[in-house]
Image 1 (cartoon, rainbow, N blue to C red):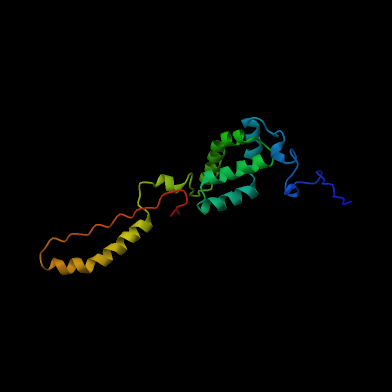
Image 2 (cartoon, one colour):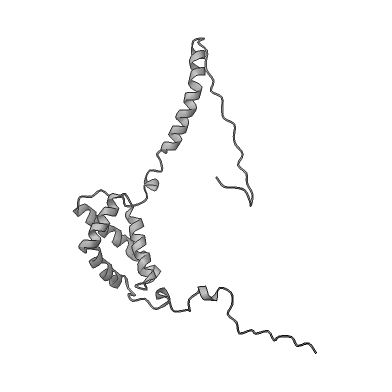
Length: 171
């Protein structure tokens, strides 16, 4: 008689070794600081430490927006289990103002938010460069026709139809 091996269902599932037990991560535990005031009492002294202050000023001089720095700081606090995400979002304006005060005190120029949002009404330098390149190509034709005292009509560019659909490539 042929014996078939019995299937064991007490094996680990695939990928189980790559995960952590529920509750073993700091952000899965109750937060250390539950109010905005407690969280700010944790952050403000750290922002004014000399070592952190020097690093902060270096980053501000590089042009990194203060919103990005504050977001990184509060996200690290959430991951360390210091406070919850909602407390982190609520303390961000205070962190930004504190960093702006530090920058003003050190006479450092800084960017508060994303410059792209602030300068959305300005034309980007790449678009200007493309327009100049296009005009340089058309300039010799325009100069030849100007001698004849005729009105020069600039040909319109054809509209490029963008592919659309579920699998279309985005540009």
